Structure formats: structure tokens, C-alpha cells
Length: 182
Image (tube, rainbow, N blue to C red; front, top):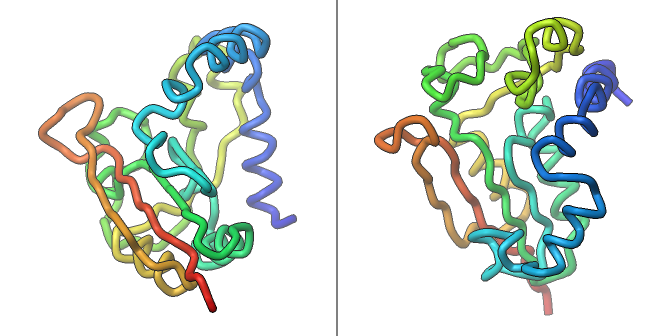
């Protein structure tokens, strides 16, 4: 495991259980809720399935997006779909979503250290103790080209408004399919 992977693992595990219980209830409570309405749990993704699914800001934790997409491709059966819904790269140039990450050039390729996404939900004294993560934010073209170059066929690309300002992009969703070979 790389050094940044170990650093990110440590950061993700710090108070993560407490955060998810506070947000979603205990695992038993959440499972009951999800069983009552499994499609509701999947939100707008329920129409896509037999997939590898990623949501809510995963790409920036991987410093090699090409390797990450290659692994997603390997995990799928022929004809399977990859759905990735993540934070829009627009956040690289504007911290409009108030995640507290440093502002940088949209075309920057540097990694940087920052707080976990859920850190902002904790009191300041807990927040100061939380380990930092190593991030690498990508441009839209880096993301889309990595999907295509790993062998996927791009089927759909949607942009979604920011939570804090609906006039700005906040998330995107890519749907791609693993090629079926006869």
C-alpha cells in the first residue's frame, strides 16, 4: 500500500463510524430503512443497474486515476456499467461548496493535504485531531479520458448543481459500459 493510501485510510477511519451513525443511524437502523425502500437508497441511480458504483467524492483520494479506472474495468463483467458520481472539478477553482480545501488552478496536477469531507460536521476540538488526507483533484477531461482509455464506452455524462448555489456545478455523474466482446 502506498504512503498516501495509508494516510487516507487512517483519516477515513478516524471517527468515521461515529459520523455515519450520527448521519444515518446505527447499521441496524440504516439496514432497516434501506430494506424498506431499496430504490430510495440509490436515489437517481436505480435506473442504471448491474454496475460498479461510486458516489460522493472518491476520485480525489486516488493519485492515479488511470490505475483506478483500470481496476473498475477489471471488476465488471462484459456489458456491465460503471457509474461514478463525484464532486465536480469546478471545486478546484472555487471553494464555493465550502469544503475548506485550498483554492488552486483548475489545471493543477499537484496533490495536497486537506481535511476529510465529513470533518466539517464535528466540533472544532475533534476536527483538529482528525488526520489529514492526501488529495489529487482532476479536471473533467482527465476524468473522461481515463474512463475512455481504460476501455469503457462512455454512455452518459451529467452535471448537477451545487448544494450551496444551484447556479454552479457541484457534482457530475458518468455512466460507462464495459465493452462486450463476441
